[in-house]
Image (cartoon, rainbow, N blue to C red; front, side, top):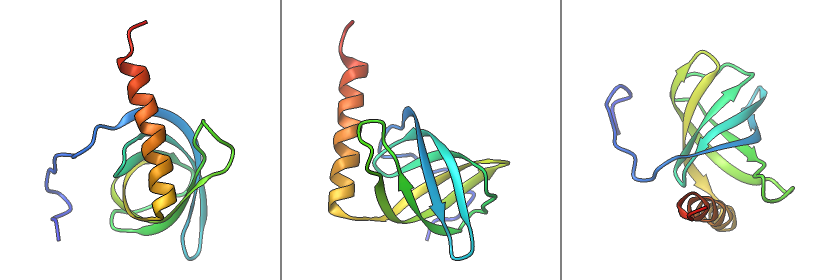
Length: 114
């Protein structure tokens, strides 16, 4: 298990986005905005306080469709006031494919000359 204060290089670049999500724990429901997103994690500005190591599920609404992506389990890696970063631990193959397709399309849009 990685040490929580240890610097780890991400294997995927995070892309700037603005999309809504709900995060659900055993005894809370939080709402937030995803600020950046990758295949393995994302940064959230949320309305419910979390702590590093906390795990919960997420319903993420991507801008490309109305139906949310269900992420069964994420883990909080860091917290700065209402901002926090999570790592995706468990997601269905369908959710993973949809997230990957969304990110690929966004990446192509960033690299296409205007």
